[in-house]
Structures are given as C-alpha cells and as structure tokens.
Length: 327
Image (cartoon, rainbow, N blue to C red; front, top):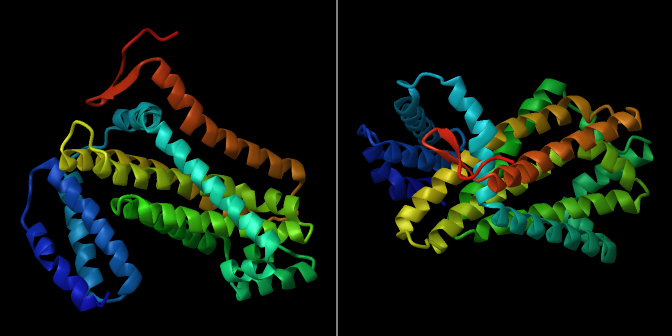
C-alpha cells in the first residue's frame, strides 16, 4: 500500500487519538491499534514522518495509561503466578489446535524436502543453502551463528522474534486466517531446515545446537499464534456476547498472553546470541539446556494451568480465588 493511501485510511482515527480519553478500555484499544499501525509503518515506511508521528502517538497513549500508576510488585507477581496460567488454561483447546497445526506444517516441510531437493532452495533460498553447504564443507556447519558480536546478535534476534510473533498475533484480527498462514509458512521452513541437516547426516547435531534456543523460540511463536486465534475466534464465535464485546474481551486476553511472552523472547534471544554459537560444547550441557527449556514450556503453559483449573482457580479483580478446596 502506498504511504499516502495508508495515511488517508487512518488519519481521522489518529486525529481522534489526540483528544484525551479517561476510559481504560478505550485507552487500551487505542494503544493496541497504534502498535499495529506502528508495526506496519516501520515495515513499509521505516524512516518516514508518518512512522515518527505514529510512534509519538503510541508513546503519548502509553504515558496516558501508565503515568499515574505506581508499580505494584504484588500485582506483577500475581500476573505471572496465577493470572497468565489461568488465562492459558481457559484457552487450552485453542493452544492444542495451534500446536497440532504447526507440527503438521513441520511434517509437510520435512516430507516435501525429502521428495524434492529443489523444494529446500525454494523455501530457504539459494543464498542460505549455499552458505550452509559451504560451512559444512569447511567442517563448521553452524558457522552462521558465529558471524556477529554476541550482544548485537542478542538485540537483533530479540527484536526480530518479537516482531514476527507480533505479526502472527495481530493478523489474527483477520478471522485467524493470516495467523494460520504465517504458522504454516514458519512450520514449513522449520521442517525444511531440519531435513536439510538430516540429509547431510547432521540432523542430531543440529538439534543439539539449534534447539538450545529454538525450543523456547518456536514455542513462543506457537503461543503467539494461539493469541492470534483467540483474537480472531472471539469475533467469529461471540457466544452470548455481542461481537464487539467478545472482540474486546478476546483482545484483552490475547494481549496479556503476548505481554507474558516477552521474557521468553528475551531468553531465546540470549541463548541464541550467547550460547548457541558455542557449537562444540559438551553434549551433556546441550542436552541439559534443551531439557530445561522443554520442561519450562511444558510446565508453565500446559501442566501448571491444568493444575490450577482442576483446583477451580479464578483470577478476579487482581486476586486469586478457588471455587473448590485445593487438594
């Protein structure tokens, strides 16, 4: 879309945001929309005045929401300990659907790569495949992880992971179709990537190296996809609510999930930037990091939410309540 058309479509709404609103729901809605606009503008008109203007509006809206609020560490702890896991238990079926869809996409990538070698290049690109094959011949198949300064790599990866996951989430507003498409393409790439190394006899080595950071990174993308489908399904299937009420509720819940993913994005970026590049580390260390990452995701996003649900846990107005006695 041309920048002028993008401005014409949104300028009235942006001008309306210049007027202060004291409604918390309206403030949250404005902030979410501005983040979406800012992400699009940064992608297509990175250094334009439009991007700077939207960024200023978003900053102003953020200040309007938080400038009068004191940091409540108890509330913060409750969010991580109870609110987010309880929220995740509520949407466990959507999470399982998203995970199954993603795994199926990975399998398609693996099978397609096995049947057609040109498929690998069409998905990963000639440059990446040539670079990888060159590194394999040099005896350093994962040399691509050693080309940057660790801190620069950490910042770049964290930014990229957050951006990709935000797109996966935000596009859920299009009835979840675009979110499923992005999950499919990412799954296809992952399956193709792994098959490339397995075909060279380096499959298990790739798992021990790449999945040090990939376990948390891929899980976070799948969970971002879950948030996107929550957003899309809240409009498609409003239940007893009006579509607008259901959409607001779904948007609030899904935004909390995305916010909850930020520490996981940073952890994955840290592992990739500072740990993955040590490709010759002892297998016991690699396996330990892999196992701990997997158990963290399994516990926090699956087992713990189910335990809270069985205990009848509910998070109401900033505090935890149990409908039945804890066993």
